[in-house]
Length: 333
Image 1 (cartoon, one colour):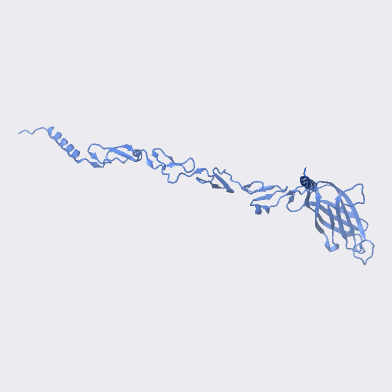
Image 2 (image 1 turned 45 degrees about the horizontal axis):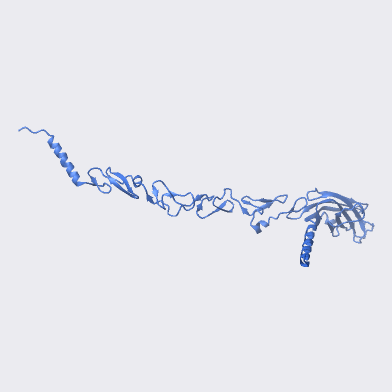
């Protein structure tokens, strides 16, 4: 193996190792609610009893991994937060503290300490908890000694756009504007596509009826391919100029009975579609495409038997007269 190749493989291995060892942190917050501080003797100083000193208190919150074999060790990896000096007018006091937690957390320690403006310690108490998550119930906590009582409640909640018990599920509804999708985030962080949209990002339009020969471009809207039409693009468009026919595929012209030609404009049985073309009792006989002839009754002529035959008519009259005169009885002299 060449030196250059060895260096490349080594660098690649180091990158993979770093990627695999990066802890999975989530965006969460530690919520402190309804914090009160009560002094046993409000008219005296918080600890020393000196009436001229201030009773303002500053609290520190420290949370991290619990080390049972190190009783006096405080790990503040999860939370390291300090309140301002709090006086009576500041209660109830609320705070949201961003925290970084490597999930899962099965056991952790919370230490609350307080001191006055002179820096004298008023109290320090540590409590142990298990299985912290955003689904854990709100915890009420009371700390008291001879001079002061502190009460508050706390919980761990996910920051905005993060969901799940470990706040590792990301869902941001504003992304629908960036990607053209349309969805809402469920309580567990799953994308719930709004009606008419689908796909991983809910940006794929859906049509209730399948677009047979087209593309769904918007909710329940089909853009048909050339030669197709209708709500679901299932109706073919006949060949332009098709007169007496229909289609089964795009741009074709299938003729109705007795019609022919590329545009179905040729009458193959003229007599059937023109029953009154022969007048005066004449009989229509198809002669060729779009052509016919009429067999006229005696005494009529013309292409449509529309005229009387004068010779035949006069001869018919003469014969009728002769027959009539020969059958009449003779007068006696």
